[in-house]
Image (cartoon, rainbow, N blue to C red; front, top):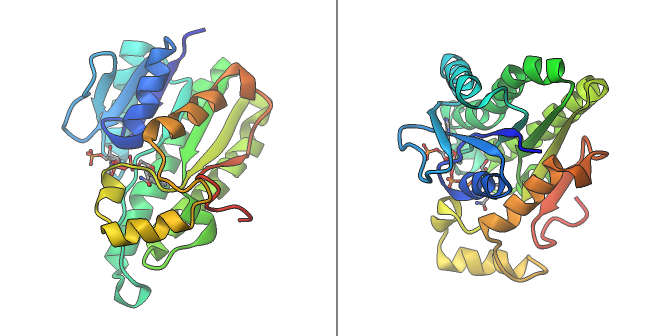
Length: 235
Ligand code: NDP
C-alpha cells in the first residue's frame, strides 16, 4: 500500500537516497529543503528550516494538502560544527542540538496528531554511530545524536498503543558531503576501525529505513539499528 512519506533534508546525501528508495517502491514522497528545491521530479519539495517551528508547520501543511497526512516520517536533516571541547562555543553546541535534536522533536510532534487519528505511523530518526560511542571534536553532535535515542524510545512507549513505531538508524561512515570534508588521512584512519573495511553508500542506509517502515518490521519499535559496517559493535 502506498504511503505518504516525509524526509527532512531529503534534497541531498542520505536523505535523498532515502526519499528515492521510498519513491521507487511507489510511495508518495515529500522532502524538505532550504531553498534548493527537490532535485528529482518524483519528489515533492517543501522549504523548511528545522530551527524554525513556523516553517516546519507550514511545510507539513503543504505536504498534507498535496499528498495527504504524513504516515512515515524520516527525521534526517542534520549538521556538524566540529571542534574540541575547550574551543567549542555555546553557539556551536546549541546550533547543532537545535537542528539535529530539537528539530527532530518538532517534526515528530507535528506529525503525531494525524498519525494518532489514523492509528498508524512510522517515525525513523537518523542518528549516528557517534551518538553511542562518542567522538573527539563532536561533543555537540554526539549529544544531539544520543538525544535522538531518548526521543525515539519515549515516543515508542507513548504511541505504541496507536500502532505508531519509532526507531533509530545509526549510520557509521557514509560517503556524502558531510564526510567529504575529512582529509584522506583521516578517512584512512576511520576505515581501519570498520570491520567491513569501507564507507557505505547512502543507498545502503536507505534500504534499512524503508525496511523499518515496511511490513517486515511491524514488531520493531524503540530499536537502534546500526548501519556502520560493524564500526560501533558493542555500543
Ligand atoms: P549532508 O550534509 O549531505 O546533508 C544534510 C542535510 O540536512 C541537507 O539536506 C541539509 O539541507 C539538511 N539540513 C541541515 N541543517 C538544516 C536545517 N537547519 N534545516 C533543514 N535542513 C537542514 O549530510 P548527510 O546526508 O551525510 O547526513 C544526513 C543525516 O545522516 C544527518 O542527520 C547526519 O548527521 C546523519 N549521519 C551522516 C553520516 C555520514 O557519514 N555522512 C554518518 C552518521 C549519521 P541543505 O541542503 O539546505 O544544507
